[in-house]
Length: 444
Image 1 (cartoon, one colour):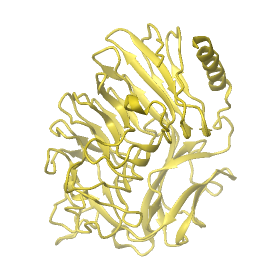
Image 2 (tube, one colour):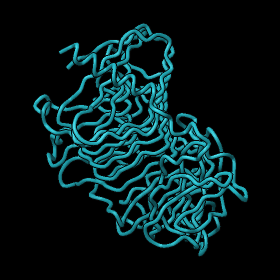
Image 3 (cartoon, one colour):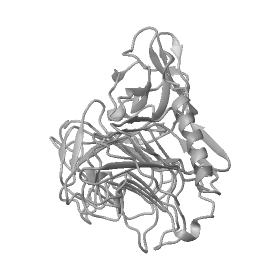
Image 4 (tube, rainbow, N blue to C red):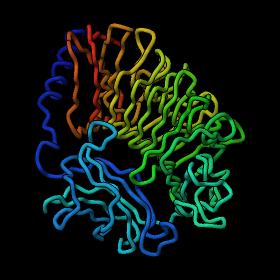
């Protein structure tokens, strides 16, 4: 059996080493966007300027210019907040942020970027109504209407606190889609329940999407040192329900040993954590910095996890596949993770991990849908170990780019394969490992 597993591992390792990297050529490649839907008007009341959208990829150049531009739903974009290489925050990905305009065609369509006359692959995007709000810690007030990015007099100005994103407090409630753009500065004021946003749902639907996004070109910092329940917390008990179609993007969350159970919690479907930077989130908890629980069709793309974790129970990304012990209605299925970067991950014991996929023993032979290649770092104070758990057998395997490692010494790697998996999604994950004494084997 061990010989069989070793042969499988050798084949997998060979595949990873030789798989062509689709970004090697000069052709621009798009990986993901923060928003998948947004309005083409409404930015500070404008009839021609809409939501700001960010896309990530490679070979995007340093436009815009005559032969380099973004196209959304048939319209060429003319206003950009940023367009640059290695803007990340993870993996030095290229990034473009732009504003939708009134020429974009309504309904479902696509985003493409053309660089030096060469057009990229497309990402799906839908032009749909949504209210646009702003939050500013410098000149905001929660009594303002939130419709302007700076104070304009009267009650015309931005909100002040992150909690105004909460449908329970936001003027739109849960009656429509809306986006809150967070301006630069450091935010500390909490909602109830010792968190920045306390979601007592159910909230959200496909036509009532919610997004909390950094203002274009600025860096909001959420200091979670006093947020014992983290940044986004879901009430997982009766009479409250699940929260779906929420997006959190380009936020910087910092903390320490008291910085919450998790930074972002998913408790619903079609939720997204995109392009965030999580730093020094070291609170003890049986959880993850990003926690996927009782959720389906989650997306965790392009995030930078810097010095996060605690022990074998606290991870950077935690995916719990079994039905929740509280509501018991759903497990975590179709979880997509990719293009994230993990640096200086922390664990005080010998088997903390950056990504943890949890299942009950009884589920060993039960179908687990939509899991991806699983890579985890294990280490003590001086010894860093690494193993790969690839949930690969049966059905679809999608590989988007090669997997990169920066390690000092590699002695052994072993892959364990779980039968009955219906979908495998492999994207790019990068690790920086400063000191490696060995890479150990874990066999199931």
